Length: 266
Image 1 (tube, rainbow, N blue to C red):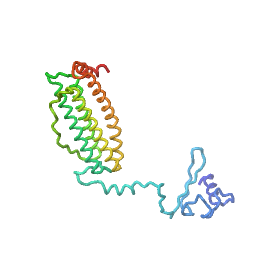
Image 2: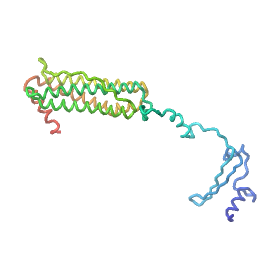
Image 3: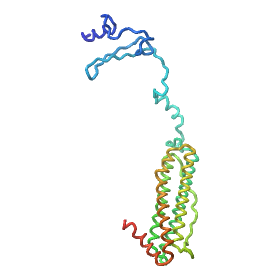
Image 4: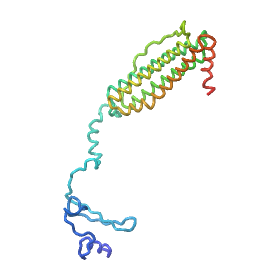
């Protein structure tokens, strides 16, 4: 044993009368662990060159410190029991209830139905005897956007461990001419109603998530869809107001040209 180590050992034992740590009773020492007699003493040198004394005790209390000690292997045992063994069940599913899964599937169906109606509008305005290319372009892009929304919801359903169940799509109208309003205004008012309906369905989905305490689904709907839906309602509302001003005559052609060249101008 080196001279320095011998001196420290002597100080710890209190042989020289000037013990480094005076002997304290277990009741008065705030530093002693559950066992008053350490079974192991280890010396280590810190960064500043000072010697550190580390004590480990035997027979310490096994009492857990609630809220302080994290024991991952103990806490994960209950999760291991929940891991499905069947290859037909999702491994990723966690806190995703059946009502939320069903509501997401319903919203997928809403998005596809709206997309189908917009696609029918595109086909109508693209006819050679209608030839409003700007409106055809607008409704084609709207149809693709709604279909993209459906696909985003399908990806989310799979991500959460749900099962996508596609439902039947209602056959849309194929004629959009209106004797009083004209085809452009009638179609745009119908589009406004569809956007408001979609927004209402999204709010219902948000409510289902809130009732079932699914914070992840609530955040997904709010961040990905709700703000965008409000913007769409505002834009189409302005188009309806403009078409009401121009009537059914030559102004509709100017409005159509605005839609056709809107993206290029931006």
